[in-house]
Amino acid sequence: MVRTDAENCVFGCNVLQAITHDAGPVDCDDQFLELVNVMSRMKHKLGPMLFQFPCCNRKSPVRQREFIDRLRGFLPKLPAELRFTHRNREQGPGWSRNCWTCPGNTRSP
Image 1: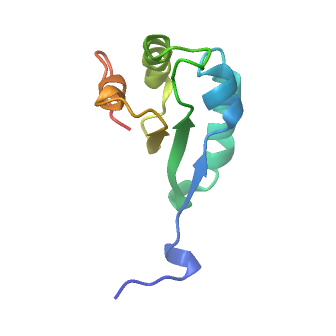
Image 2: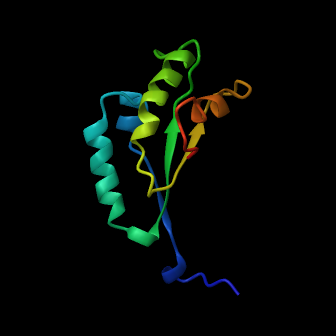
Image 3: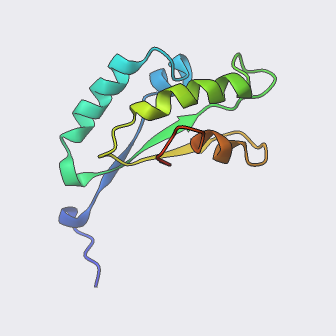
């Protein structure tokens, strides 16, 4: 039997839009570290942290290739002791898989 009380509950969080959208994620190390420090206080109650990135389409200021390059620079900064997940609004076939499993990234959040 699975218990559903607060003792067994874990909480996820959305990574701040200032990191995912505004920074895109470049030059946001201080903001990200602050978020990680605050959320780490939850210890075993902390579930995955969600990166919800904007769509990279013709109207967006950042093109898909540039976004993937930015993401490649950001992924190694993710603390190994925490869990992460992502959601992209992009509809292109397989592009999300390619950026999360980029060369040099040994982790797939």
